[in-house]
Length: 224
Ligand code: CMP
Image (cartoon, rainbow, N blue to C red; front, side, top):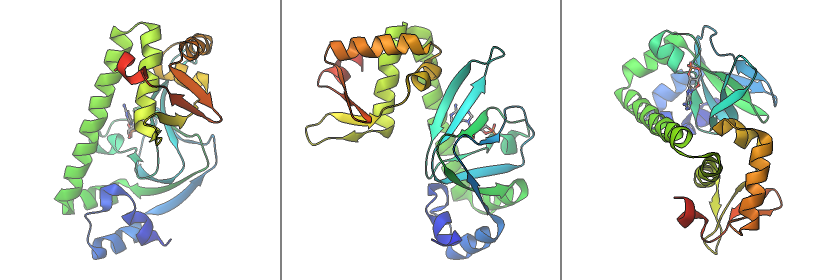
């Protein structure tokens, strides 16, 4: 795919005219990040926004004790790094490639130019930021209101709905995340997650099938 087709595949830019896409393609640069590369660290100064073409980016905050809390997992078509450009503050979180990842980056002034010239892009960006705020509110309620068992169940349901696929029989199958990743989404330990997942499996509410977890009938009803 050439640069212009790649840019078209980013939902934020679908509204752009061919002319705008062509000029944007001259401004955007490609960056390949092998698995485990840090794209940038929290608190750094930031000068670029990134679009994910392929792969997965973990948005994370590290506590002083080295504990990690995962704010979000982003995939193809998503963008990140816009906040530092919008409010002129340092990076609000660290971004790490958790798979081999292909990015497009746009420099601050070019990003501001595209937004200024295309109200539709600004509107699309605000929509995504609102969705992220809703998710963050949901995450706050999960952390503040549920006990650890409820949190594990909720995060499983969220991951299934965000990343999963419906099987013909109506069950949802989704990527089997590591127990550490699940723990880091909800501020608990890996051991606790392992224990809770075993428990859910014993109750027949989840099943591990190869590299996927499958929610069994009754799971959504029990934890929605
Ligand atoms: P920026 O602050 O420049 O750098 C970190 C980026 O992570 C930030 O821009 C957003 O793009 C992204 N980010 C921060 N918080 C969240 C969140 N709660 N959900 C999704 N993405 C986020």
